[in-house]
Image (cartoon, rainbow, N blue to C red; front, side, top):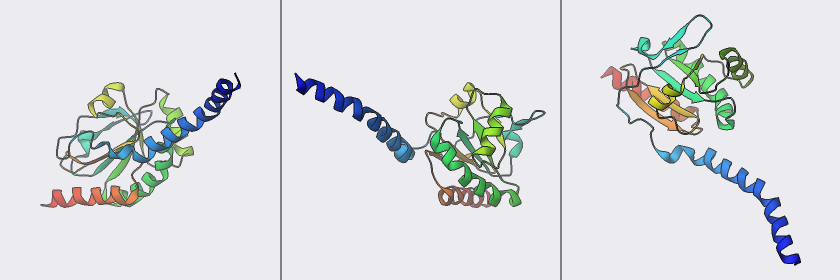
Length: 179
């Protein structure tokens, strides 16, 4: 009789750790799922609120590199990647290029902005709709797209990716446009 109860106690003690291990595995290896939208494909349209008075329009950024980072306030990997994307944005801004965080939260824009600043996200934040997420095939967070000056997907990443890989993709997009 003590054997089943010992097994149950062990299972009860282990399940939170199994959940943590699964979450870490998704966070760590989430980027291996391949591109959400193929490189070279035209970026889908995206018009989203990003200030109380204005809209972000991806189509208006032709001629510039735009890094779109789909994220959510509840996503740990997204919060971790925020300061990295802020550094990328600092490097891009002098060239007219930008990082734009695209939140998939169902919170008011002001609440999303406040949380983004708390997480060290010092770049513009827009609010996506479910249709936006579907057009960009966002299945895992964060999902990051580098959109070249020609409006085409230069690179895509799922999961935390790091500054070096994003900047390499930005440089490839710039070189491709210069040809």
